Image (cartoon, rainbow, N blue to C red; front, top):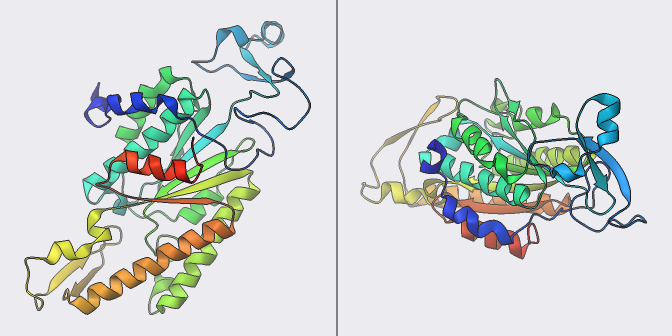
Length: 319
């Protein structure tokens, strides 16, 4: 299968001991594998939902089938499945270098595997400037390779205004959203021109306001949220690109999303300012997630997924 060229199936076998845990207690809809605070026990009937491939056929409600000629499965008070949503920033910057987009796909696959292995439900939304789309809802590990195929076939391109795209999304019931992006300003703004001639303090404050808006919007939609920042090694340490060059050499940098060009001389002062700006934005992003009762993880595209797993374990995002 083509997906095996990218996805290391032996790694996912090691994920069997892990399960996703909800960040907040669900407000309605799917409740997940946790003990409900409401009265009841594991044999107390609670609800039904439509049958999905991979569901236990012993849970089929044949009385509902007799009435509707559709398959439904029974849900119980303390064992209703969680619904996880993976939202991926599909802008062009997420594909440079290719290692970055592959790392993004691997993270999405890892999250999906954790959910499916735990008997929960998962869908993926590819956030694009034109033609954003959401996969069908997957349930059961038998669906895993179909999901991998969708991840491999998705293409990164153009600009993505994430705030607008998330605003237009609708969710059925409560759940948890994993938002995967590089979170490199100015994607967060509706109009990138607004950052022109703004001070670092203004850019940082605008980033905070817009991200807080996104996280509160998700919470209003009954979704807890986890932000996963994915950056390339070059974005983390751009000095590695200029180790063999003269400090006076002129370079032309092209924005992969807008095509705009700027000329720079990679001086120590310029690199120092870059790191200061990046650090301020990342600190603000982390602080905003804390304020909005969300979670934040960061990963570099050349790091093993085990390192991200370890960070998530420490923060209680999965267990």
